[in-house]
Length: 373
Image (cartoon, rainbow, N blue to C red; front, side, top):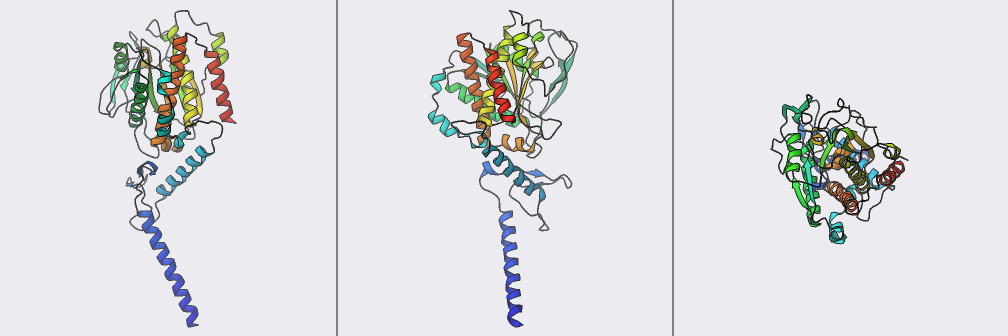
């Protein structure tokens, strides 16, 4: 009897020791900043738990923390199993910028002579004043919003946009391009029309607006590229009321072949060519789901532009997996490198004068179909 009681006491002691050790381990912060989830706000108490804390004051498990780990592991698993896209430098959070920088010959895609604009979307504090949606238009929109916020990370879109913009600018400069940035800080006040004017005054050859978005459906994940609508680019007035955005509005190869694009509407054609090249390469290097190319007439930054322009929505911050990926350094590298490679394709078309948009769209649609299977 005594022997049995001793065994039970030893077992109970070992169990308590194991529980205590586990609690200490869970409470210890993770020193690897790139693999650590940002703080997760608790919806009920409105308090934030520091990344790496697994138990609260009363010793209860922090569900938000464990949910974050679950989402993180799911994200990594999806990226590891993404066999439909391949890259010699890795894909998504497995992308190795150091390897790419060592092996990629930036001089082979010489961009010298080109002035390229980068607009990291949004800013720290929104400007709710209104401005005309296009020169001479009676319609108006808010000058600038602060952007979306990560559903899991709580990180503002304007922060992510600027990080990736700086990485992209570095790659472009390595290839000899002159880079114009609309902003280099978060604490600015620059409206959408003013951002376009910055690019106009610099006489950029083309420019790219970097954004993330927030979708109504939390399951929506992937990349969308926006381009100006055909009728908005040359008369600088609204030819029709602003169209609501549709996530499913894809520009297809058939539409391009059948569209009656005026001979002088080169900016629309070039914006479309830039969009098809960028979305294809971006999705190749990030593994993101391509959601489509959308033509819009209600984008103030587009309507004031004198040069080809696109806006790339690099992911949905309303989706936990996208949010986690977009806050990882390796994935941000992949985003920048993908956009850079798309720019190279577009620059080659400028050089040759061959805008084979139908072929680009066919290639993009084929890659999209492959990923959807």
